[in-house]
Every structure is written in C-alpha cells, then in structure tokens.
Image (cartoon, rainbow, N blue to C red):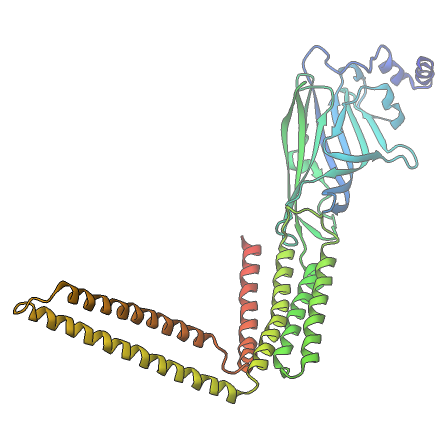
Length: 428
C-alpha cells in the first residue's frame, strides 16, 4: 500500500508533490488548534419515489463540502482541479446520512467525485449520491395529507470539539427544487437548520434539510371518490323500482355492495397494513359502503312489510281494529275509574257518618282495601294504553311510503355527511 502511494506521488505535478510532502491524511486540519469548520450545500437532482408502504423516499443529490486545510496552501491565484481518485491522499470529513436505508455513489463512467484545491488551502469536495432515506409519515388524512421529510447529515467520528458543520448560504444552500417534478406531491416549502446530535459517546454536529410535501388529490378523486359516490347514487335507483320486482332490486343491491367491496380492497393495496392508521379515504369508503348496504336493507324492510300488509285496505282495516281496541280499552279504564270514584264517595260518606255513629274498625279496613286494588289497576291500564299508542305510531300503514321517504332521506343524508367530511379533512 505504501508502494502504491509512493508511485502515485511520483507521477503528480511538482506543485501537488510539494503539497503532499509531509502531509498526513489521518490527521484533521488544525489538529490541536480548535475544530475545523465544514460548510455544506446540496443540489437536489431528483426525488424518484416516495413510498407510503415503506415510509421512505429515494433521492439523487449532489453533496458539496468545503473546508480549509492550512497544509494545502500554495502560491498562485488559480485553483487546482484534481482527479476524484486522488481523494484517497487527502483528509476528508466523515459525513454520513443519518436515516439512510440504502445509498450508493455513482461510478459511471468513473466515480462521480470532485476535488478542487484553492491557493488559501480551501478544499471543495463534491459527490453524486443516490440514497433511500426513512421519512416518518402521518397518514390519518390520506390522501389530503401533508408530509414533512428531512435529510440529516452528521459526522460519524468527530464530535463538536473537532468538526463544526454549517450551511454555506442558509436556506439558499439547497438548490434544484424549483424545477423538481413529483408524481403525487407538490413541494410547499423547504428550510434548513443546524443542531447537535447527542449520543453516549458525545455531541456531534448535525445539519438538517426539511421539505414539506402536499399530496395532489385530483388522482384520488378520479380514481376512488367519484366511483364510490357513483355507486351510492346507483344504489338509490332501486327506490324507484316497484317492490314487486324482487330480482331487479336484489340484483342492484348485491351488485353495488360487491363492487364497493372490491373498490375498498383496491384502495388499500398501495398503503401500509397498519391498524393504527384510520385514513380519510377509509372513512369515506366506509360511509359509501354504509349507504349502499343501507339501501339493500331498506328493500328488505319494505318487502317484509309488504308481505304482512299486501294492500293499503288491509292497512286501513288494521288501523280501524287498533282504534276499536283503543276505544274498548278506554271503556274498561272508564268503568274502573267510575268504580273507584264510587268507592271514594262511599268512603267520604262513611267518614261523615262517623261523627254520629262510629263504624267498626273491620268495616273501615275493608273499604280501604277494596279501593287500593282499583287504583293500581287504573294506573296499569293507563300505562298499557300509552304503550299501545307508541306501537301504533311505529306501525307502517303503507309499505310503499318507505320508498318515498328513502328517495328523500338517503340523498339528503349523503350530501350532509359529505359536507361534514370535506370540511373536516380540508380545513381542520
């Protein structure tokens, strides 16, 4: 290895040979005299994919690092551009991407690295990297969600006493976002920050690039929301079909339920199977499925009532019979009430006669005991009459009215729930 380094130094120009003479790449600049300051900038070439299933994104970036090495100063006013393979002869920062799952350095046709040395000892080191970085996502409002992802750069072995990171131009240190085109997202905002990473081994410099993404909802409106709403409207067609057309109404109900189930399964294929996420699209599909299933249940109820009340005449006769029963019950209650009234008058008369002739205790007790059961019976009959009235109110006189009511209640309810849904997920 030493022989290969020596042979490499022999073919270098005299200026580079002079700089490399006595140079130790294993020691950082300003060793023992304070930390070395490393300025960084990024150029985002592309953001290829953003995966909700894996919760990560893949990006190709140009990472540029600048620092000053006093051992590389030379006379002149022009910079020296060196072959990227000569980076093995120099000290470079041990920068790494914190949340990277997989990264690689492009090497076609050669390794995409750049080394440039300025007369004052400033070194520019540039790399072209493609990396897959983890991004924690909150999918509760999917597909009307906004996500904030980060790209974090840290020093692996040098703590803040050895190396200090900073963005060279603040928020302007990251470029290439103006012409960036994403498939499902639009870039809302981006900014940079500087901090320190605290570990058991010490504090290390950290640079963070934040970018906010907003998902484009038009695709999901055309792919999911419009078809599911159309299925709900299709299920309402059965309200205008005669109740005697059993095959037609059952066919519409079952077909819309099965189609809605297929649509719900297809909408979940591109999302993580996590129970902790109840997404906005799941809520809407659940609402649509409930309305479609409700339309099927509505016909079952209406058909059941039709079997028990074949025509309106029977419904009318049932109402007449119910009225006669109520009148008969009222007569029973009235007769019982009159008996109680007579008993009360008799008791008053006996109390008045008590002043002239004292009745025996046994007679007074019999009168009181006879009036108490009559009072209890009156209360029970009144309660029974109220229960019969409530049941009579719930009774459907004409089953065809169920379809008439459904034609109005189902659309109005669906419109009202849609207003609540879109207001909540778009503005809260």
